[in-house]
Amino acid sequence: MQQPASTRTIAFLGASGGVGLAALRRTLADGHRCVALCRDPSKFMAIFPEMDLGLDSPASDDDSAAATRRLTLVRGNAHDVDAVSRCLLVPGAANGEHQIVDTVVFTIGGKLIMSKLTLDDPNVCANGMTTLLAALKRLRLEGATSSGPDSPRIVIVSTTGISKCGRDVPLAFLPMYHGMLRVPHADKRVMEDLLVASGEMFAMVRPSLLVDDEAEAQSASGSSSDGPAFLKQLAKTDLAAMSKEELEELKAVTKDELKEHKNSAKDEVKALEGKYKKEHAYKAIRIGIEDPIANKRISSAVGYTITRADAGRWLAENLVLPAELPATYTRRIATITY
Image 1 (cartoon, one colour):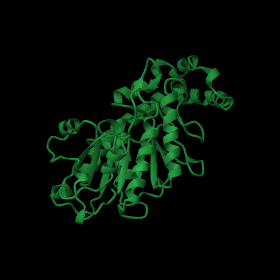
Image 2 (image 1 turned 45 degrees about the horizontal axis):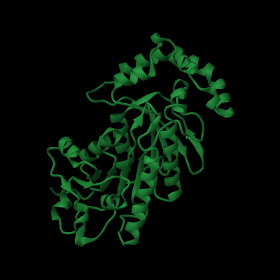
Image 3 (image 1 turned 120 degrees about the horizontal axis):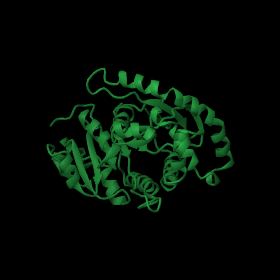
Image 4 (image 1 turned 180 degrees about the horizontal axis):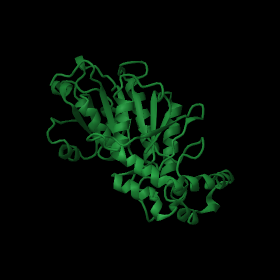
């Protein structure tokens, strides 16, 4: 099919599920051309059975069909410079020219091993970012062109709980964030630092705790009828593992958290009443902004959860689909939560 003049090419690393898949769906729905890196192409063929899916065609200069495919698959993993390099090239570029994609969406992550409180690969995000930056450097040295001086735009998904500018998670989640998520959070910090130091154009998203649906989100945040869940979690907190600054902050916010909890039921009812004013309406998403270069918080948004579907759609609509990255998010971190 003929692509409109405004069509751009977006590469996805980690789009076989979760936030990445939701962002990919939304981007495809807007008519843009996408390239997805995948270890198992059959997963995408099952998800998008109606599409004409190309495999590894970015590496082929003579594949004329690649220029009009909406979704092209590149076989490989995010720690392989060769595979990532192929994923970063526009399929079927004119005259065999090697052109770098307009945007890269980076949502890779590891699998949490609960019994050991670690990931199957403790450095999955850091190594993935290292590989992405190495692939971009290689392509530029080989003469690949970009669509503009700030191209490609790199959009990554990180996590709350690792801010250097203060607390960005509810007090109830501190035991979990300082315990079972310590290893993946350390990995995310390194990933963020590598991207900030790279000089590339970027935008980062830190979703609050990701859940699959709203029922799961409600369960995670608790309700007023169950009592103050954060007090129960506080009893399990390993205070010895917290720094002096964290202990002082914990002491200071306890009173505010109690006040906040007393009004939670009323706020939940109000949110639900306006939730579906029309079919498929999104739940309201609150946004906080940080500047990681100046190490400064511009605005704050502290919340319990957000669904993977809503996080992916928000990412696509605000950071991928705009022709120019909005100044609000340019080289900044957006915290998103309900």
